Length: 326
Image 1 (spheres, rainbow, N blue to C red):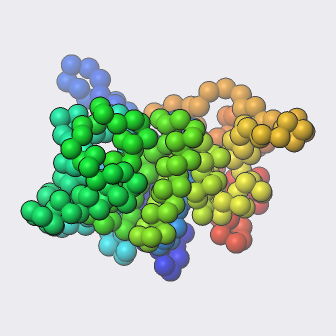
Image 2 (image 1 turned 30 degrees about the vertical axis):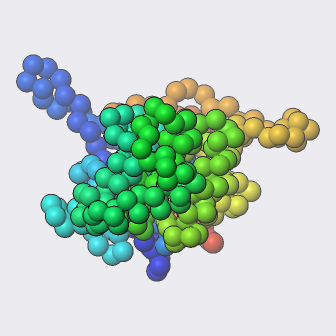
Image 3 (image 1 turned 120 degrees about the horizontal axis):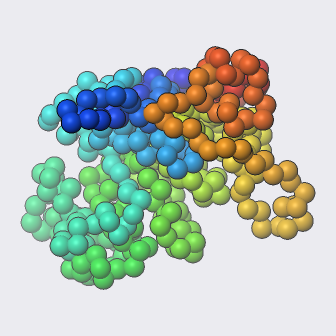
């Protein structure tokens, strides 16, 4: 799955976490958090990554940033394989890639002022000093619609939405090209969510940013994303343009997810078909054979239990991993 003009290319990415047991702490199994996935992110676009809790979304984002040393596969940033970089070369590359954390209450150091939190990346990468440093911090605060005078306050003096703006300003400090947004609005009230989403969209246009937007709220993802990837139990099930996914979902899991999205019009909501999935999500320690979704799929056939479906392009950049689609 490759194209010209890509900023990020993921090829056969795997991230397994060892399960240790016994007095000697020997490895007895692996948690297959991300299990052989491939996708790309174009320059200047937002790719939404959705799925149930525990499906591997956050792990995927952190693997791209090389916060985990991956178990296998390749992660390319502008043609450079990040998995081959170490030490100073990786540190320099990280200036181009930043992370916005999910929890604005836990991701800010309570002992540092807002200005110090935002300016810390500038000092770590030796970008500015003195008067220029203070000017940069003030500019970053203004960029996320906070008053520069707020830089002397501590995190406990801000609301949740303001804290997330501080986290966004910190991510922007080193002028990155790519940002992983790890459920940046899930801990916020709905009205504040809209403000943060609008801010992220404006910053993307003004600074020519590229986002991986991780979320479980499909309505939020539809609003901000150019394309959407649907993930289940460490696998990519479907990837396509946002309008195409919401208008023509082809994978049974995507159809089930969309059927659960609330619709504000009661007359339309009553007419649509609800898809209720049976059973629980299997353990990533011992995932099912064949298609990982087959134990909960009403359309599963024998081939689904025996052979893993390949993620194929059925046309117009609509990728689906389902035996029943072809």
